Image (tube, rainbow over all chains, first blue to last red; front, side, top):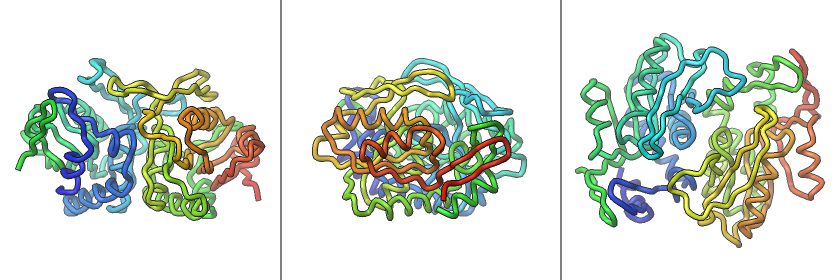
Length: 189
Length: 189
């Protein structure tokens, strides 16, 4: 997605090897117009998939997921990172955060993912694939069917994308980064 | 907003006094079409305010805030609940959660709220006003100007709305609830 790549080149920061900060337009401050363009693009790429539900993780996944849900006309469920006192019957899975070097649980109320649902996962980043694998685990536990996974940015030099594609999952990343060093970024073709 | 009130009547749950669960369409599963209607309505009510930025809190505030930002053509900043290792120069404030009976900090990178910014706050719920007051505190620390506060749902039987309006803040709540008991809800006129 050319608009996104240009924006990463203009406003992204890469302070050290492997680190990309997009907090001025994707995951702290949001450019709502760009996020809508992202939602339109995901809706176009997964139009064939007949998704009945979009699944993401709070907090950074919510904005692209809700725009995609709006464009596709399907509800969005966001997995929560801590059990709210009001959640009954959660389906849980574990995520390892490489950035913070901690494990945390994510959970979805089983009421909102059912056998028969065709689920499209949307998230901001794909790197090692830990969060993506937790979403897949939750979908499997629910009995629903995964139909695809869309990521705003993929760090293609880390293993997540290969792991998911090797499982036969249709993965779409709007900006795939091949190299990321201090003050240097290179996208895949 | 009639569409929202009808949806609360149809799909909201009020299991005990003062508790309203809207997790099937607002804050766990999201009806993206409804959230867009909410964004359009906030944009209409605050069109006069010449906001340059929208401020909300992760996670439930993000979806209505990003739709409002899209409709108004302004960027959205969401306050984070824990300090990510990548945030420099945070502006912090404290929120008391009555639901969970805990205090937590929220923070915004000072880069994204500047003197000269005209800030519209958007959040899902207004109850005691603790989160709202923390957002006001952050705006004051940043030197920006608060131009209004929009809430999807206001529990008008709790003190937050009165506190904010008594400060002279323009508050808009799309559904104001006067009474909320087990299996009984009444909206303000």
